[in-house]
Image 1: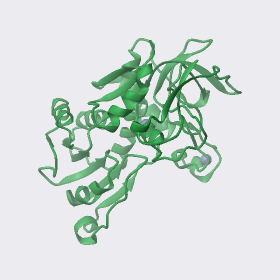
Image 2 (image 1 turned 45 degrees about the horizontal axis):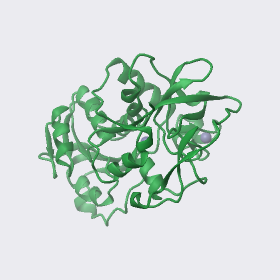
Image 3 (image 1 turned 45 degrees about the vertical axis):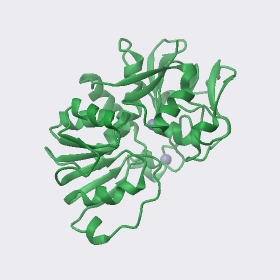
Length: 322
Ligand SMILES: [Zn+2]
Ligand SMILES: [Zn+2]
């Protein structure tokens, strides 16, 4: 089969992704072999290609928003970021498997979906409907699920004012989920096209920042630590800023009075539990969001990641198998 692998991690201009031929993987006990129809492109894939996240094994295929069919049964499934957890540690036992120290991740600890086939533990794949376009389902699997967890983690009160910093794949789905719950959404993005998309999807404002009113909650999607102080400063008393990404550049020095006092909270979002994934997919399949999918041919994975690195993707990039 054909597969993209991260050769030598580095800037996209250095060509870290290589298209190779390898054997179709053989599923082990409890695993399924999935023929990939489409795989969403996530900023985490870019972090892995560029080396912001250190590789955990050599020449691994990225990709953790896989829509495909189980070989043998034909069942449509989604393969997402969380690949396995131990099930026995204190975090797993208290419903926080996203914090499991022995958790593994698709496209990092094992080959992911930038390939014609992927294997995944059956207990960690999500059933998907057979009649929806793969290109619209793929972004739900990380952009959607992680955004959903970030929305829960930012403690937005009912009808509250939510700031969204960075308006890419995850933000455009999260904004729709928040607006459906009655939130007033203010988008902050340096991209004019993303700001336009935010307004089309129902945001109350979209600016280069700062937002036009104090915020009850905010989510930082851009992997930019310099945005943490202004985002904290834009919170109203008691507000929470959740950082959605797996990687963030260093956060500058904070001033207690300006950034944290009045019970403002800064917190991270770390992966997701399977319960988050099931809850989000149930919601998103019952009330489908408008998915701004930007399709790329499978052979164009390096171009897709290059476009993501250069802020040229408006919506969610998806690799599509011919
Ligand atoms: Zn992701
Ligand atoms: Zn565990």
